[in-house]
Image 1: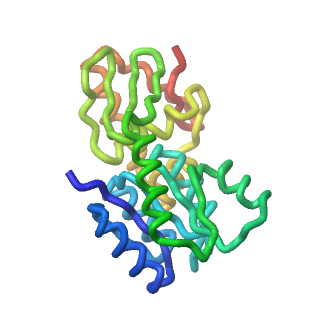
Image 2: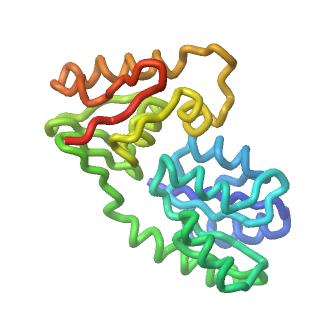
Length: 222
């Protein structure tokens, strides 16, 4: 299967060159000209790696990296025109795995892509008691059995699992998992929680999602 690279870059010349080099190396390239489109593409297409420009027209690239990292372990390479050391440190703390300073050689970028994909071969595993989540592979198991979740249910459970025990309000969940796109007074979060609980209940895992009345939801710690 072709590995998919998501390129979030607003400069069409850079997009064209990078896309050509990556496709010549056998990758399938998805492109997005801004942060919102990039986040939507990442959610819908589950890329194997993201190349992210820092200077996007709608959001700072570091903010996009933070949003991606909340629900995914996908490798992120940031392209930046800034060479300051403290800025690079901030990018890595935001969730970037690597960065390249513009101008750069496309061949070097392809080489760094290959390195990150090798590192990601086995992927991150989130283990909380009997719950096991593989964000990159988008697989979830409980008590050794696969939990068949919808894409949004998987995103939601992964979001809770990254900080087990922490209580998230519905508003926080809507903002982070649905990017604040739900209408007011929507019950979508509650419906997804109920569906996940029903699927986990069949594997004796109903109680791992805790409802905090009047506040929101949390994933129980062992």
